Amino acid sequence: AIRAVQQAKFKPGKQRGKPVRVKMSLPITFKLK
Image (cartoon, rainbow, N blue to C red; front, top):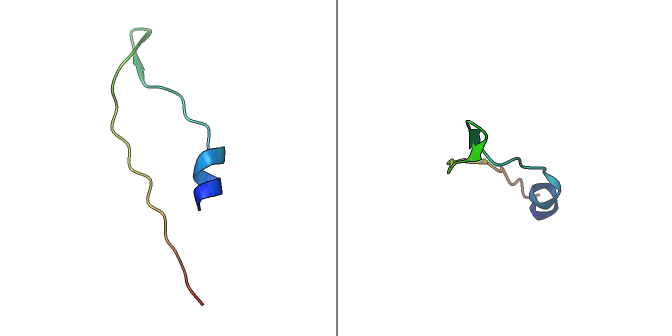
């Protein structure tokens, strides 16, 4: 899961061409055997 998050490409949120703060959640499900 850590590798998947590190490989994800994120683009900063922008408004009128300027970076703005955004809030994001990324649910990750773990399955144990």
